[in-house]
Image 1 (tube, rainbow, N blue to C red):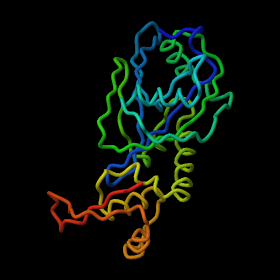
Image 2 (image 1 turned 135 degrees about the horizontal axis):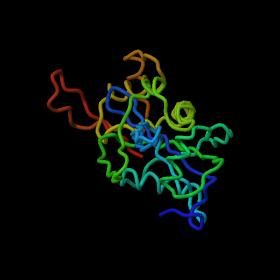
Image 3 (image 1 turned 90 degrees about the vertical axis):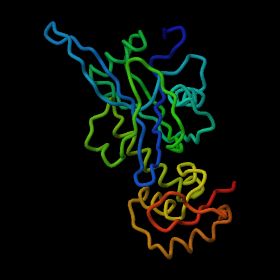
Image 4 (image 1 turned 180 degrees about the vertical axis):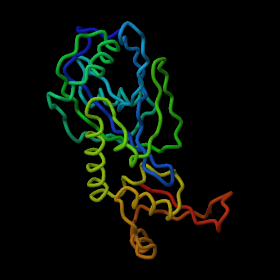
Length: 237
C-alpha cells in the first residue's frame, strides 16, 4: 500500500484522456465509490474523476503520467502532452475528495498541486482496467459541464480541451491519434468539426486534406455500411 516513504502526498498527475467514437469526442473518467458514515449509517457515495495519482518520491512527473495511463488502460505508446499545473488551495476543499484520497493512499493528505496531461488514444483499442473499487467509462465532452467531478477536474478538462484544439491547429497530424488506422475523409472531417465546434464545407475540406502529404489513399472501401461505401485512407508518418 502507498506510504510516505514511497509517495509524495503533495504532488499528483491527472490525465485528460480523449477518444473519438466516429461521432463524438469523449473523455475517459474513473467512477469512484466511497462508503461514508452519515449519522452512524453507512452511505455509498458515487462520483467521477480523471485518471490520476500522487507521484512516487523518486519518480519523474512525465513517468508518473505514463504509469497512470498504463495502469489504467494497459496501453503503451500513447500520445501524452503536459499542459498546465493546477495549485489553487481550494481544489482540495471538498472533505469527500480528501477522505477518498486518504483511504486510497493510506496517507495524510493536505494541499496537493497536480500536473495535468492530455492523452489521445484510439477508442477502439481494448482497455485493461482492473480495480475492485472503481471502473472506467467514456463520456461525451459536451456532457461534462452538466456533471460535478472530483476536485477541480471540470476545469482541468476544459483547459485540456483548449490545449488540444490549439495543438491540432499547429500539428494537424495529431488528429490521426484519435482515428482508426483506416478511416474515411468523412470521419476525419467530423472529428475536426467536433473538436473545433464548427461545421466545415465538405468540398473545401476535401480540397484541404488532399494537400496533406501524409494522407495515403488505400485501394479499399468501407464494408458493411448501409450507404455507398467510401474510400479508406491511412496516415503515414
